[in-house]
Length: 267
Image (cartoon, rainbow, N blue to C red; front, side, top):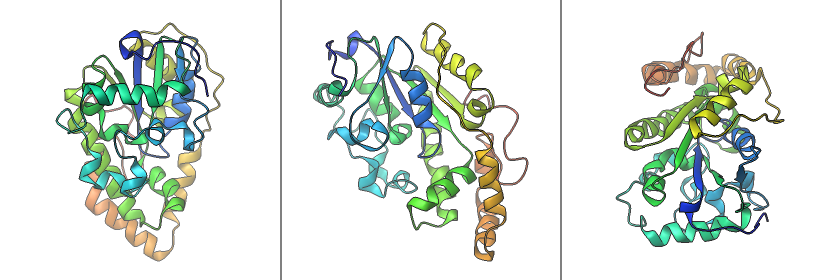
């Protein structure tokens, strides 16, 4: 546990919530941010990737609704300011659950969980001054990377990507402080993107030693293309069904896979 002395009152901290589908880069981006001298991320939780969703019982974790590649299909995973558990008691319960794993002497507290992209409005209602950082990654890469964790088809995984990000997009206008970025941009220029995040959060510039692997997406694109005949059929179906909806987010299911710029709707 971190558990260094400090206040459990969220008003005494700058709360940062990070979200993005599993295998989208949330973990390394959270580690980058938590490495800042003024920040602390959850550590020593003994749960996967130190995800805050897994060390609390205020709201359902993704695993209760199918887990990676499935959770966003569940209406119960989309929480807003109108959800029943959106109460001051829930705020206090979350701070008690997460507090032992933060260094509470730090001003900035980071909580990262993939399903945050479907409950940002809820978290904002609980923590009104919170900041949100959402990261997206190409649906083919997310589908291929998630496939080893589930028996779900590639087509269903792309469908889940679309469902989750459309929920995120619909909720963005309700948020006071939100930044959306792409995994591909972070990998291409981690220093610049990290500094952009720090600027958004009002934090002084800092460097990070977090290693970011490049070229991984290209391996997934190739794997998608050279799949077995059923996989190629699934890929064609994904293109026919979801190309237009994916393009909204600056991606394509056919080359070139990533637009030059993040659409202004999300930038």
